[in-house]
Length: 333
Image (cartoon, rainbow, N blue to C red; front, side):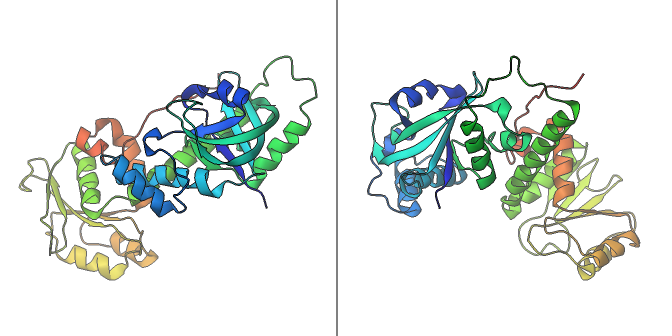
């Protein structure tokens, strides 16, 4: 079964006309040169690490994945789509040839595939779901069967007269778009937080507490006797409130025994915060409710919610653990 791919025409569709006129799609990383001999993702990843030694591991993995798909996974006959944001037009066609290294298309995008363009589809003709799916910021990604089918259907109807004015977005449709975008963004942020190391997770929680006006002390690595962070107004734990924090960064849920052990080591005037990215069992939540000291539980959803609420107040070091960008969308009036 043939696959369907989106290949972006660089930032702001800079290469859209070149793609259209020269019947190609292309992606970057020109310093890698010809990747024809790199038949596996590992081979491409190794080449990338050598060529771009200063790149972050996450950036390296993302680039290697996209390059592997472009060089090795795409096949002749696969559907291909690119987009011009200025005209809000998708160009749809099929891959017509194997991968090649060709600097003549653009000096910054030298990894090239020949294509046969079949026609154009206005973004206004697509459903909200498809528009949202096609809005990924990735340079290259695979399209779902549903989105590919909708593009083919719209392409088959391209002879129909286009609307005289852009289709209006109803209030309900706008709400759907916003909710979809917000949900996707939260899931991406949760993925980012989940990928943090244990010490980075401690730093993130401590940064959140600092954004609320507390000073924090983080326990040294090793046996911590049930605490990872102490937060208080003075930073030493002498001035109330004294918040003692346990951070568990793992897949499994924390149970009632974990909560009992944590609470048992606390002073009567302490406040407890137990952070578990793997969540909590129902029994653990009940244990926290009847604890002898005020004890709050924070799972991954709660952590991301707090992160978004406090992000502008976080110090730079904490923001760099989970870099986020603010975007704007039209508001219904």
